[in-house]
Length: 329
Image (cartoon, rainbow, N blue to C red):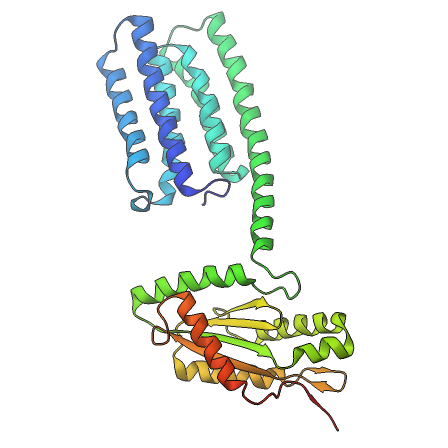
């Protein structure tokens, strides 16, 4: 279960507002229609309002995400009971409940059970009320189809919007040429890993590499060949690293690899493996090779900027002798 269409924080706030609105509306209806609120109505609205305020005020990381399912369920129970206690006009509150379910859970698998629960709630008050009048029937006939329409249409729309957003997010962090992560993804991952490994007091490695004299390939064979070579390098790096490692293209012919839970010795082994793998690539009569610089958290830096500087410094030191593209003779 997950809140796909909107953020978890927004879902909690929206749910808290929904509960408060239903509680206030029920209490106001009781006061306007009867001139007073009996203890059942007052207790029901008070409990719902407290839960709604808790959703607004309590930090959401103290809640289990599955409790989001309790928000519309509680609101449905609130309205169903209030319809019997107060008036059928409150059935209109099923509409914002349906909208909340569609926005927060944009999958029919989750929305359909709530849809049936809401429809059942519309007719349940008939079991304990004698107000089976024409007006009551009209309310049910109006609200019922509206609940179905809002839920189904909103779920479809939010699911499509979620798909579009996910595709946009994916494209925003992927390098269009090589298919590996881009610079934005690299920085996001570095911030995540520095925080995570600092809490666990563990090491991780950042490898930075570039293709020596790549400019020569562009000038000799053309940029199309150079672009194809970069795509091959990105694909090869993605294959040679572990599943938990990340490959990123900083720009030009510079790539980076983030290796979690990796110390200096393991980083050196990974660097050697990458250099050997790249030597298997040829462009015409040119054999590819690369220089690799390494930085290990937290010894070489405690934040992304320091780690990148340390890896770049190590890379420059290793590029003292150009050796990436050597012509066969």
